[in-house]
Amino acid sequence: MGYYVSMDMLEKIKKIEALIASSKSEGEKHAATLAKNRILERHKQEPVEKPLEYTIHLGNEWKKKLFVALCNKFQIQTYRYKRQKRTTAMLRANPTFVNNTLWPEFNKYAALLEDLVQDIINDLINKIHDVKEEEVVIAGELTETP
View 1 (spheres, helix red, strand yellow):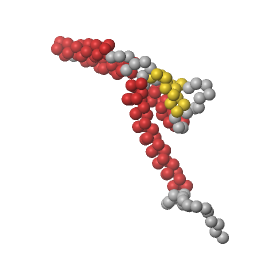
View 2 (tube, one colour):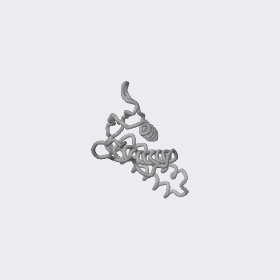
View 3 (cartoon, rainbow, N blue to C red):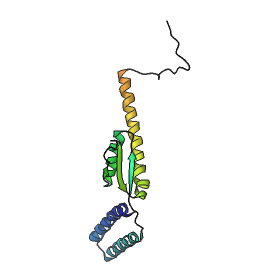
View 4 (cartoon, rainbow, N blue to C red):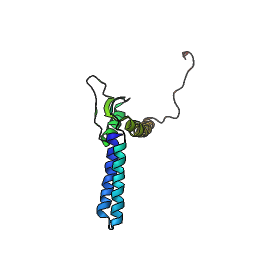
């Protein structure tokens, strides 16, 4: 949990501090301060996961660009070692974050990207030649026709 939970925690604390600063009554200010203290106390009790190094093999450059963009969104640096394929991305991150946030979000966007690319390809092919049906599948050997 560690770093990525703390980023979420920092956002919550910033919102609470803004609430404390803008509160008009002592009661609001006191309640917001207690909420801030509860969040800080809960975070101290959470076990800190060690980041693991992940090797992600992505099928093509589009998916790699998408994956790197998502990692950048979460402030995770990607890299690759010498002689690794261009479609490989390496990263160090907490397993909980990768499994619960990064990977599901990547899969969602990758599916959208696949659908979009497929629509564009189909549209382009139809503009070149109006394709009504797919290729004919022949079982057995092809016989010569005179």
